[in-house]
Length: 554
Image (tube, rainbow, N blue to C red; front, side, top):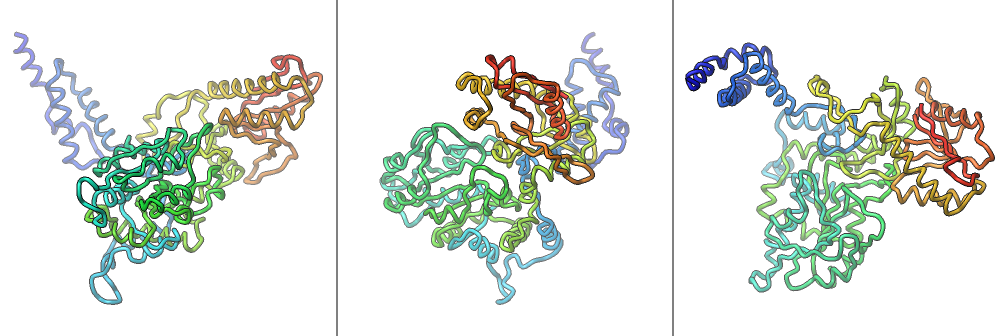
């Protein structure tokens, strides 16, 4: 009887065409939708209980929406991360976009020599131009930086015909510091990528400290190369040491071992101009320091399309180009077209036209004005600028973005289904974040007061605060000008904020007998002008600092 009822219920499962009609207009091609409907109906058929027609249609509709949302489409990046891996990294310059359209819409001289009138070499100009940018003897391009690293390791550890081929003397070891065994996007790790080529890893040093002697002790008959990986997606501080490239290259030359640097981010301009605290080494600097080869990405700080660029000694670059693997990793005409335009902008000193670099150059005040025009929400919040996923820029004080003031734990699904998707940074409840920041800053003040005691405000207290805030990972600005943004202009009101912590918290410091209402009015004025909703008033001239602290929230 149960089986008979079950068979009868199966007859109620709607046909594919009935569900298709009920769905109405969809943006996906019909064959894709039909396959998806069949897949969902199979799940319904296998279930114990058959739902009604409307829930079945709604189930299919959700699946269609999810699949439609996975199509490649433009999004508005509201996260504050300028070069975001998940959003396609660096946006292309308008010159690169025009080149893509021009080359992609017709035929080109991709592998044709227009002068000789015969088959030519792919990428002759771009390799010459990249060698000039890197101040190298030669350069070449593959489809991404990981591919460039694989090609280099495969050549030196497996395919280098200049080396002995007997098993006893085969050089397969890649020497690398343990502190540079980084994990890149998608869960892939440098060590696993190297091992995938058939090479053997020889890790040296400790996570936080590696010396040139560690490298020297590791080099032996099986050593194929020394690899230095720049920590471009994270940083370490504290008891940290690693030898400079000059010392490693001197050791490599003495031991007759190739020295390769993976620079990752591909900065070819002075990163200090971009508000980046830690200097990102350029390919030219790495090669001058003695590296035989460098490799880096084309779609990060270089500002172009996804590509892996390697440059260095002419004989090594030529040998890598002869590798069979190079053919499998080469770039297509569209990548080369966009990269060529980006290279020309670098050589023409027109980096202001490269969107990623232009965005990083925007000053805090310019961003605040722009944020005021774009945002209609009641509050403008600040957060640490990020260069690309995972690594905060330490000296860039803030970016400014709109805040709804609501606590959220995931993206708004309604937003995801709109034609123009806006993706923002999801954080903890704003009030919780401000409370946590206030507690840490107050704790820092208590420690300074405990060590130095009640006193008048002086430079030694400022210095103690600087050290403690820095150790906590906060960027602080002292005697900060408070300007009023109105009608697209910044007006200097003559006000100076004593301390701005991480762009999120105003701190006014006093050394007086009693805090008066005028002092409270002062900090509230600063908070309103700067649109920063939380402020602290700290009076150091008290026996117990707890009695001298007041917190203000707009």
